[in-house]
Length: 352
Figure: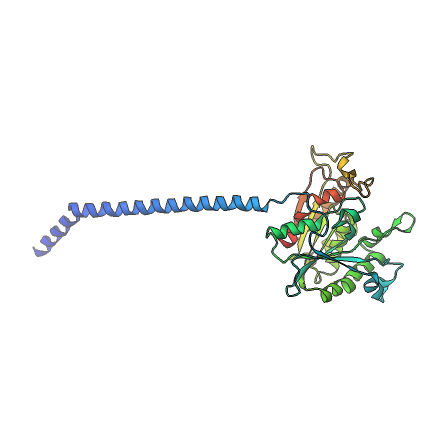
C-alpha cells in the first residue's frame, strides 16, 4: 500500500505544472544556446571573409616592378677571384671565359642573419634594363624588394648572385652560352662544377648565408642549366625555377632516371606562347621602347615551340611524384620584358 502511494505521488510530481514549466525552461535555454552559437559562427565567418579580402588585397602584386638595385648594394667580384683560382678545367679560359660576377645584397642585409641565396643564370638580364641584351631586364630585384616590403617572404630577403652568360662564339655559329647551358658535355660540366666548387663556397664564406637555402633560376636555356645543376648536385641546392625553359632530351631522361634527387625540392616552371585564342603578337612596340638595345626583341616567338618539351617535363615530374608549380602565360613572349611581368611568381614559390 505504501509503495502504491509513493508511485502515485511521484507520478503527480512529474505531471505537475511546475515540472512542465521546468521542462519548457530547459528547452528555451537550449534554443537560446543554439541561437548564440549560430550568431558566433556567423560572426566568425564575417571576420574570416573580411580577413581574406584584406589579405588578397595586400598580396596583390602587379608589374611593372622597379628597375635597378632598389636600395640594395651591388658588389662586383672580379674574374681573378673566381675563374682565375680554379686549377681544374673550370679555370681554363678557353672553356669558361672569365667574367665579373655581381652580387646583390638586400637593403635589410645583416651579417648576423643567415640569408638565402639565389644563383641566377644570364645574370646580366636579371636586375637592370641597361645591362640586359634586349634593353629590358627581369626586374627581379624590384620584385624581390616589393615582396619583402609586403612581408610575403617566409625567409629573409635573398642574396642574389648574378652570373652573366658567356659572350660570343666558340667557333662561328656555336654560341658559348649554348655550350655552357647545355644538358651535358665538357662545357656544361665545367660550368656546373664551377658554380658548386668555386662560386658557392666563395659566397658562403664572404657573406652571411643559409646553407640549406641556395636556389637556382634561369630562363630559356638558363632554365635547363638551373634544373641540371639541381639534378647533378641535389645536396647543394634546395630548388630551381625555370622560366620558358628549353629542355633537351638528355635533361628529360635525367629527370626520369634521377627523380629521387628532386624529392622535397622547390620547383617552378612556366611557359608562354600560343594558347587557344591567345596568340603571340608578331610585333609588339613595347619590346622596342627601350633606351638600350631597342632593336632587339629577343626570341619573342620561341615559347610556342618550347611547349611540347615543357609538357613532356610536366608528365615526367608527375609520374615520378615530384611536386612543382606550373604557370601558363597565354600569348606570352620569349624575352626579358615578358618574364618581368611574372617574375614574382617563381620568387614567391621559392621563398614565399
